[in-house]
Image 1 (cartoon, chains in turn green, orange):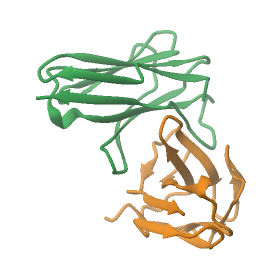
Image 2 (spheres, each protein chain N blue to C red; image 1 turned 120 degrees about the vertical axis):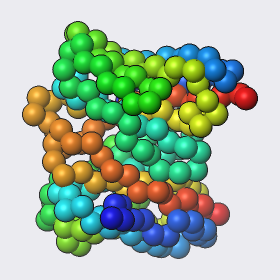
Image 3 (cartoon, rainbow over the protein chains, first blue to last red; image 1 turned 180 degrees about the horizontal axis):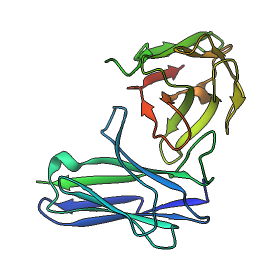
Image 4 (tube, chains in turn cyan, brown; image 1 turned 90 degrees about the horizontal axis):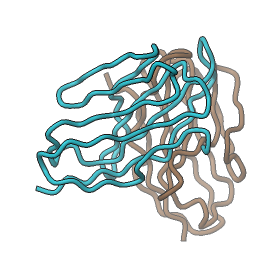
Length: 113
Length: 112
Protein backbone atom coordinates (compact mmCIF):
# COMPACT_ATOMS: atom_id res chain seq x y z
CA UNK A 1 0.00 0.00 0.00
CA UNK A 2 1.31 3.46 -0.86
CA UNK A 3 -0.09 4.69 2.45
CA UNK A 4 2.41 2.58 4.34
CA UNK A 5 5.99 2.87 3.22
CA UNK A 6 8.91 0.80 4.44
CA UNK A 7 12.52 1.79 4.01
CA UNK A 8 14.93 0.66 2.96
CA UNK A 9 13.62 -1.99 0.58
CA UNK A 10 16.72 -4.04 1.21
CA UNK A 11 19.66 -3.87 3.53
CA UNK A 12 22.98 -5.70 3.65
CA UNK A 13 25.03 -5.42 6.82
CA UNK A 14 28.09 -7.04 8.30
CA UNK A 15 27.54 -9.21 11.34
CA UNK A 16 27.81 -7.18 14.51
CA UNK A 17 26.57 -3.93 12.98
CA UNK A 18 23.48 -2.06 14.13
CA UNK A 19 20.68 -1.28 11.72
CA UNK A 20 17.32 0.47 11.54
CA UNK A 21 14.24 -0.21 9.42
CA UNK A 22 11.51 2.40 9.12
CA UNK A 23 7.79 2.22 8.54
CA UNK A 24 6.03 5.47 7.67
CA UNK A 25 2.28 5.98 7.55
CA UNK A 26 0.33 8.69 5.79
CA UNK A 27 -2.30 8.48 8.55
CA UNK A 28 -2.36 8.22 12.32
CA UNK A 29 -1.53 4.75 13.52
CA UNK A 30 -3.69 3.16 16.18
CA UNK A 31 -1.71 -0.04 16.05
CA UNK A 32 1.58 -0.93 14.39
CA UNK A 33 2.70 -4.54 14.08
CA UNK A 34 6.15 -5.84 13.20
CA UNK A 35 6.62 -9.27 11.65
CA UNK A 36 9.65 -11.21 10.53
CA UNK A 37 9.68 -13.72 7.72
CA UNK A 38 12.50 -16.14 7.18
CA UNK A 39 13.05 -17.05 3.55
CA UNK A 40 10.49 -19.58 2.40
CA UNK A 41 8.62 -19.58 5.69
CA UNK A 42 5.65 -17.92 7.32
CA UNK A 43 5.52 -14.64 9.19
CA UNK A 44 6.39 -14.49 12.87
CA UNK A 45 4.91 -11.79 15.10
CA UNK A 46 7.58 -9.63 16.74
CA UNK A 47 5.92 -6.69 18.49
CA UNK A 48 2.89 -4.46 18.54
CA UNK A 49 2.92 -0.74 19.36
CA UNK A 50 -0.11 1.40 20.12
CA UNK A 51 0.83 4.48 22.08
CA UNK A 52 2.76 7.49 20.87
CA UNK A 53 6.32 7.30 22.14
CA UNK A 54 5.98 3.62 22.99
CA UNK A 55 9.08 1.45 22.82
CA UNK A 56 9.34 -2.32 23.13
CA UNK A 57 12.33 -4.61 23.10
CA UNK A 58 12.86 -8.31 22.62
CA UNK A 59 16.40 -9.60 22.81
CA UNK A 60 18.38 -7.37 20.44
CA UNK A 61 15.39 -5.91 18.60
CA UNK A 62 13.78 -2.64 19.66
CA UNK A 63 10.70 -1.11 18.06
CA UNK A 64 9.48 2.44 18.60
CA UNK A 65 6.40 4.41 17.63
CA UNK A 66 6.92 8.15 17.34
CA UNK A 67 4.92 10.67 19.35
CA UNK A 68 2.83 11.65 16.32
CA UNK A 69 2.00 7.98 15.73
CA UNK A 70 2.90 8.09 12.05
CA UNK A 71 6.29 6.45 12.00
CA UNK A 72 7.78 3.36 13.56
CA UNK A 73 11.34 2.16 13.57
CA UNK A 74 12.78 -1.28 14.17
CA UNK A 75 16.34 -1.27 15.45
CA UNK A 76 18.59 -4.32 15.64
CA UNK A 77 21.70 -4.11 17.78
CA UNK A 78 24.78 -6.19 17.03
CA UNK A 79 23.14 -8.03 14.12
CA UNK A 80 23.59 -11.76 13.65
CA UNK A 81 22.99 -14.03 10.66
CA UNK A 82 19.87 -15.28 12.47
CA UNK A 83 18.36 -11.81 12.05
CA UNK A 84 18.32 -12.20 8.29
CA UNK A 85 14.91 -12.27 6.63
CA UNK A 86 12.12 -9.98 5.52
CA UNK A 87 10.67 -7.55 8.02
CA UNK A 88 7.14 -6.30 7.47
CA UNK A 89 5.10 -3.69 9.27
CA UNK A 90 1.32 -3.86 9.46
CA UNK A 91 -0.91 -0.89 10.24
CA UNK A 92 -4.17 -0.39 12.08
CA UNK A 93 -5.62 2.98 11.08
CA UNK A 94 -8.93 2.84 12.88
CA UNK A 95 -9.30 3.61 16.55
CA UNK A 96 -10.63 0.49 18.18
CA UNK A 97 -9.54 -1.60 15.24
CA UNK A 98 -10.72 -2.37 11.74
CA UNK A 99 -11.49 -5.57 9.89
CA UNK A 100 -8.02 -5.95 8.39
CA UNK A 101 -4.44 -4.77 8.63
CA UNK A 102 -2.54 -3.06 5.83
CA UNK A 103 1.03 -4.24 5.31
CA UNK A 104 4.10 -2.53 3.94
CA UNK A 105 6.07 -4.18 1.15
CA UNK A 106 8.79 -5.35 3.47
CA UNK A 107 12.50 -4.84 4.04
CA UNK A 108 14.86 -7.64 3.07
CA UNK A 109 17.73 -7.91 5.52
CA UNK A 110 20.94 -9.80 4.75
CA UNK A 111 23.57 -10.22 7.47
CA UNK A 112 26.97 -11.29 6.23
CA UNK A 113 29.15 -13.30 8.62
CA UNK B 1 -1.22 -25.92 19.88
CA UNK B 2 -1.00 -26.10 16.07
CA UNK B 3 -1.95 -22.45 15.39
CA UNK B 4 -2.77 -21.92 11.70
CA UNK B 5 -2.37 -24.96 9.47
CA UNK B 6 -2.26 -24.69 5.70
CA UNK B 7 -2.40 -27.53 3.22
CA UNK B 8 -0.81 -28.33 0.89
CA UNK B 9 2.64 -26.78 1.34
CA UNK B 10 3.53 -27.10 -2.33
CA UNK B 11 1.44 -27.54 -5.45
CA UNK B 12 2.02 -27.48 -9.18
CA UNK B 13 -1.01 -26.98 -11.41
CA UNK B 14 -1.52 -26.85 -15.12
CA UNK B 15 -3.27 -23.82 -16.57
CA UNK B 16 -7.02 -24.29 -16.32
CA UNK B 17 -6.95 -26.77 -13.47
CA UNK B 18 -8.80 -26.06 -10.26
CA UNK B 19 -7.78 -26.58 -6.67
CA UNK B 20 -8.65 -25.60 -3.13
CA UNK B 21 -6.18 -24.38 -0.54
CA UNK B 22 -7.16 -25.35 2.96
CA UNK B 23 -6.65 -23.35 6.14
CA UNK B 24 -7.60 -24.26 9.68
CA UNK B 25 -6.94 -22.57 13.01
CA UNK B 26 -7.41 -23.95 16.49
CA UNK B 27 -7.16 -20.71 18.47
CA UNK B 28 -10.86 -19.82 18.47
CA UNK B 29 -10.06 -16.81 16.29
CA UNK B 30 -12.96 -14.94 14.75
CA UNK B 31 -11.31 -13.44 11.67
CA UNK B 32 -9.45 -15.24 8.92
CA UNK B 33 -7.53 -13.95 5.89
CA UNK B 34 -5.97 -15.10 2.64
CA UNK B 35 -2.95 -13.24 1.27
CA UNK B 36 -0.65 -13.79 -1.65
CA UNK B 37 2.98 -12.76 -1.58
CA UNK B 38 4.90 -11.93 -4.73
CA UNK B 39 8.41 -10.48 -5.08
CA UNK B 40 8.37 -6.71 -4.78
CA UNK B 41 4.62 -6.63 -4.13
CA UNK B 42 4.51 -7.46 -0.46
CA UNK B 43 1.43 -9.10 1.00
CA UNK B 44 -1.77 -8.54 -0.92
CA UNK B 45 -5.12 -9.40 0.59
CA UNK B 46 -7.27 -11.71 -1.54
CA UNK B 47 -10.31 -12.32 0.65
CA UNK B 48 -11.11 -12.19 4.31
CA UNK B 49 -13.75 -13.31 6.74
CA UNK B 50 -14.25 -10.92 9.64
CA UNK B 51 -16.47 -13.42 11.43
CA UNK B 52 -18.04 -16.80 10.84
CA UNK B 53 -20.65 -16.53 8.12
CA UNK B 54 -19.18 -13.47 6.39
CA UNK B 55 -16.65 -13.06 3.61
CA UNK B 56 -15.39 -9.95 1.83
CA UNK B 57 -13.15 -9.14 -1.09
CA UNK B 58 -9.70 -7.79 -0.52
CA UNK B 59 -7.31 -6.08 -2.87
CA UNK B 60 -6.91 -8.86 -5.47
CA UNK B 61 -9.99 -11.14 -5.44
CA UNK B 62 -10.30 -11.87 -9.17
CA UNK B 63 -9.88 -15.53 -10.03
CA UNK B 64 -10.50 -16.71 -6.48
CA UNK B 65 -13.40 -17.80 -4.32
CA UNK B 66 -13.52 -18.50 -0.61
CA UNK B 67 -15.61 -20.44 1.85
CA UNK B 68 -15.75 -19.95 5.60
CA UNK B 69 -16.79 -23.49 6.33
CA UNK B 70 -17.04 -22.96 10.08
CA UNK B 71 -15.21 -20.90 12.67
CA UNK B 72 -12.04 -22.95 12.27
CA UNK B 73 -11.76 -23.34 8.51
CA UNK B 74 -11.37 -20.88 5.63
CA UNK B 75 -10.65 -22.28 2.19
CA UNK B 76 -9.45 -20.55 -0.98
CA UNK B 77 -10.45 -21.95 -4.36
CA UNK B 78 -8.91 -21.35 -7.75
CA UNK B 79 -11.51 -22.36 -10.33
CA UNK B 80 -9.32 -22.11 -13.42
CA UNK B 81 -5.68 -21.56 -12.54
CA UNK B 82 -3.60 -19.11 -14.55
CA UNK B 83 0.19 -18.57 -14.56
CA UNK B 84 -0.41 -15.14 -12.96
CA UNK B 85 -1.62 -16.99 -9.88
CA UNK B 86 1.81 -18.48 -9.29
CA UNK B 87 2.61 -17.18 -5.84
CA UNK B 88 3.03 -18.02 -2.19
CA UNK B 89 -0.31 -18.02 -0.39
CA UNK B 90 -0.64 -17.29 3.30
CA UNK B 91 -3.59 -17.80 5.56
CA UNK B 92 -3.84 -15.75 8.74
CA UNK B 93 -6.24 -15.41 11.63
CA UNK B 94 -6.82 -13.21 14.63
CA UNK B 95 -9.21 -13.11 17.56
CA UNK B 96 -10.47 -9.57 17.13
CA UNK B 97 -9.65 -6.05 16.05
CA UNK B 98 -6.48 -4.66 17.61
CA UNK B 99 -5.08 -8.19 17.80
CA UNK B 100 -2.14 -9.26 15.71
CA UNK B 101 -2.39 -11.88 13.02
CA UNK B 102 -1.14 -15.43 13.36
CA UNK B 103 0.08 -16.70 10.00
CA UNK B 104 0.27 -20.16 8.54
CA UNK B 105 3.50 -21.38 6.98
CA UNK B 106 2.29 -20.81 3.43
CA UNK B 107 1.47 -22.71 0.26
CA UNK B 108 3.83 -22.34 -2.65
CA UNK B 109 1.76 -22.63 -5.82
CA UNK B 110 3.15 -22.86 -9.33
CA UNK B 111 0.87 -22.73 -12.36
CA UNK B 112 2.46 -23.90 -15.60
